[in-house]
Length: 178
Image (cartoon, rainbow, N blue to C red; front, side):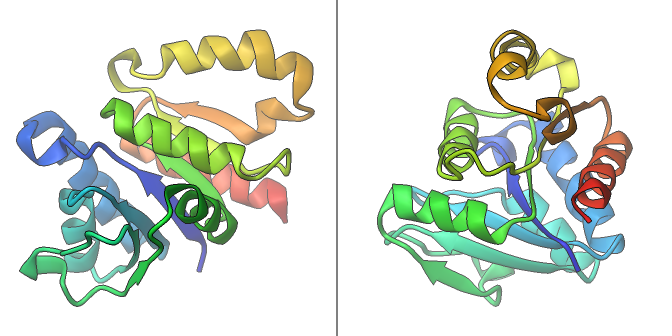
């Protein structure tokens, strides 16, 4: 079972479209047998994703800061407290086989970058759901900067257009690692 680290907006529950994307992703990934790893920081996390995955019979675990208090709907999920942000993001990147980003807030993309940067050059695949061109700036960065400095970046940085495409790209990058 692949461990997929998912970065999703901490503001999702208040945004119907983001909440829907999280729910669709959680359901699809759980049904496909993925184990999801999520962050819970500053009292918030991707609750719609976690709830949907759990409802679909999936396995979800959480890395959290010292302020972690999960809502009752997901309180039975395993939570590991790692108080220091940099250490938490490094552990997240170490445990996840692939990092996945859903459109969201600056906090979620910052957490993605912190986790990815903690790998210190070890190729960690990243797949982003580029809904409404949410990650176009990152796509430009990948083409302009990573293409000249990170070998195999095109195999390790992927952009998806839908939740189904996201799963397909995640499956592809995992297959490439074998």
